[in-house]
Amino acid sequence: MLTVERSRSVDTSAEPRPPHAVIVGSGFGGLAAAVRLGARGYRVTVLERLDAPGGRAGVHRQDGFTFDAGPTIVTAPYLFEDLWRLCGREMADDVTLKPIDPFYRLVFDDGETVDCHADPVAMRAEVARICPDDLPGYERFMARSQAICRLGFEKLGHVPFMSLGDMVRQAPDLLRLGGAHSVFGLVSRYIKDPRLRVALSFHPLFVGGSPFDTTAVYCLISHLERRWGVHFAMGGTGALVRGLVGLIEGQGGVLRYRADVGEIVVEDGQARGVRLRSGETIAADIVVSNADAAYTYRHLVPASARKRWTDRKIDAAKYSMSLFVWYFGTRRRYPDVEHHTILLGPRYRGLIDDIFNNKVLAADMSLYLHRPTATDPSLAPPGCDGFYVLSPVPHLDADIDWAVQAEPYRRAIARRLSDTVLPGLEEHVVTSRVTTPQDFQDLYCSVKGAAFSLAPTLLQSAWFRPNNRSEDVKGLYLVGAGAQPGAGLPGVLSSARMLDALVPDPEFACVRA
Image (cartoon, rainbow, N blue to C red; front, side, top):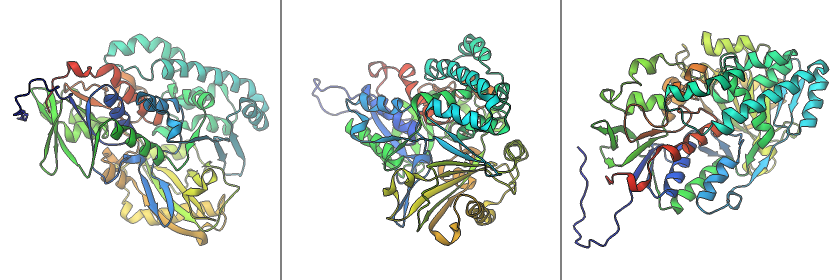
């Protein structure tokens, strides 16, 4: 049992201490939750098992290069701006966001390119250049994307689905807009050209899903990008992490690093705090877990306290793919390479089947190449370029020994880049590091090394996804990619926004610490 230290002071005029919120993990979901709870009057302690904030949005610095470890694409920037305004400040005073155009350049295996533009006129011209007959269908698809975005993101993106009834009430509208289709299936109803089908359907891979299985609700991303743009934080995504840490500390919140939570303490069905692996116990009135949702229930919440999220249910869930990420710097610059490049292999559906269903490491690959120095040269030494290249790969259910396969796979990626968009790459690399699916499990406690937690399928969305207020434990809340509404920066920030409607005001919380 936790004990609460009682004050020995006889000064009854002293103000009672505000209730204590303990947040497990300092990814964007945890940091956003800390700001929101701090703004409402909670005392906040954020516990991070690594030695720096950010979680999967951490930063690697080596040999004069700065590499964002994870998210690189900022959409719906108002979700960040809201956090600064809760603290009476403006984000622009701390972080500069720069719009990127084109959003992405897709490079197909035959050398054909498609640029995804911010400007609707330029994008229509690009569609007409590729396939004039698809222009009317493209216009209809974008209208459908707008309608889905207004309902699925603007209206419902921050609304928690706490019961099956909540979902049933919205189901007719979601189904009418195409929610029962896959992303690729809905795109294919409007678009015939295979290149344009890829250009409009690859987005689920950014949130861990197969375009052929992910619910078409995620077609909202096309309009989301058009409306709010695609941005990059100058200084790297780590600048956003540092800015949020500054907000939390300005509120009086505390961040502790190398604080590895081993258990969420539950008494009589109520979260009462956490116990670190060091043995230290930290009492709390509420606990917010930004750890992987499946990991939270499987390893942090005692099995005796779980009725819905049992080991059997967690093990049977469908998980996102994982990622192989190579961070590298070059002694020369590649000025013709865009900030975001999608380098496609000879197969689309076949490769995705190998990743998600067959769970094999295919000989071919499709790659996302991030060149942040195209926008912010300060992230590399003068005359140099910094990159990371990301390859979707199976999660750890696949029979792949990454201790053996990592270096051969990195070399294969280097050859592919050298043969296509980065000529002579191998002789110009001056710094290098990799992250494998095993690292996602070991460093970030991701079940199966899945890079985006639970896959965004129809039956793992909305109410079917772990609720932001735990169904099993009172006083426990979940944020991050594995909870509602899902992965991606807008989803993760929205999961923290949901706490505004779920966490009681401080005066109604029982002070435990």
